Figure 1 (spheres, each protein chain N blue to C red):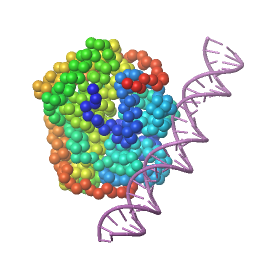
Figure 2: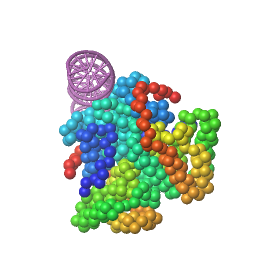
Figure 3: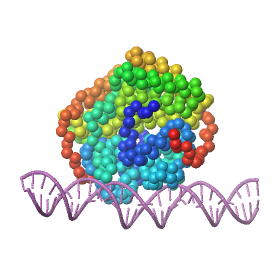
Figure 4: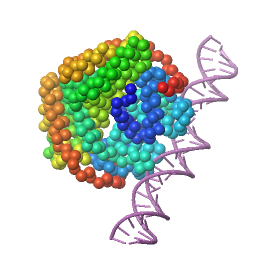
Length: 234
Length: 234
DNA sequence: CTCACTATTTTTGTCAACAATCAATATGGA
DNA sequence: TCCATATTGATTGTTGACAAAAATAGTGAG
């Protein structure tokens, strides 16, 4: 359940700020804060019982990750990627993840395999019990942990940002509900990787990501900007 | 000479701050500010005739790009990547650039080719006149522009960060002088891409990046932390 | 000369109050 | 009713002074 490896996404922030950033990222990733949600500084400061200055630093950091939009004078809100961004982001993921499976930095150990398999099993369970939130989380974790294990920290950090942005994209443009990653695909990919079938694994991953892309509809009416800061807890 | 495409690396910063960030990035990239250079806030504020508060925001932004280290209480300095980081960064570049040439987002137009060829020609000129600084700059621009043209904005932003960090790595660990990118390689890569020889292009790029890596010596004594803020002009 | 300790100076971190800006509402005339 | 304008309220942006911490310089004993 816990993040496989503490990635140093905290660069430049003190622990308290890093914690706040993590909470907000999590809330965005799990769509408790949909794109467009306003993020007033004082609200957040009160929520995390900290000062406005610190909130400000965190918002700047998150805006540099492109998951928060920071318009001067108008404050911060959860980012709403343009269709063009969406295509670029998904294309980037294809390049990165397909490329990585094709030319992995290191091979998957048996231990690694067990770890990833466990995530997939949990995905199945969440699918059965209908826990959509947990399914989203697990799906992201599969992609991220696979990247860490077959790649390295630096690659994983890029990947983390892309996954978060993908979460925003799906929230904005998903054509039909329940279109998060297909657990079945994850299983096939993992097996191919385990057996060293590099070409097959990367091909599957490419198709998997394309499928996500094809389930988007950019002509969708952008949902109205929600306000209120809510439910940051877990 | 000018950056091919204005990448929105200014997210969350006002224009003035974005300009400052660009200047510092440039100075770091061209090694006018070697790794370890101290970056006192008031110094920078005076240099750019701005306030300490703004400098602070810029330093936070740059620290999130991993090119500035921001230790609490001790101020900012140009980052000094660990050998482990160095390996991860170069591995990431291999995955990204090789993967991109193997599975390009779009094909190179004749116009694009001319643009890139011009850069290579300038590289040759700089090599002859011995203008090492310009050579470094051009070399980085070749890799970056190629990424933009064959990929997209999002990929290019990741690439920009990786190239900057590579510049730090070379400054720290280069075994022998004059080991910046070999212009010859660039030429061969470009020709392969132009002719649509995808496999060949990606193979060459992989070798090219490995060559850089093999010219590093991690046992090198880390050069003493230089101080003084100097020569930000161009 | 070196070490340990103290004092000084520089630099960073923080805060609260104020100014500027934007969003929302209210007002008034056609 | 509708639009334009003015007022209000809420939120963000900035400043400067101060506190805290670290680097530096200085002092003296061994």
